[in-house]
Length: 83
Image (cartoon, rainbow, N blue to C red; front, side, top):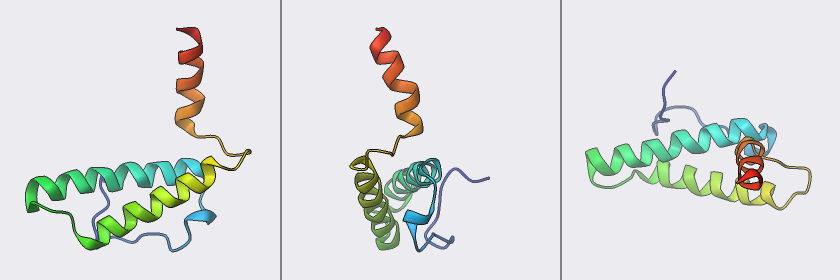
């Protein structure tokens, strides 16, 4: 399993159909791809930038839904409370 999602690899057309952890994994892979492209190509591909924007919009949309919780939130919030 790759830790990045290259522009030539499939990307879901409807992010809202995915579970939150799946969106978060995609987001991580796209950020790793952006880092890779900056280091190796000097700039990101347009496709990777568009994907990152779509993911950011989807995560922001879910953040404003009361029933949404992220995997990160489940781990980090309890740690912050206990500090």
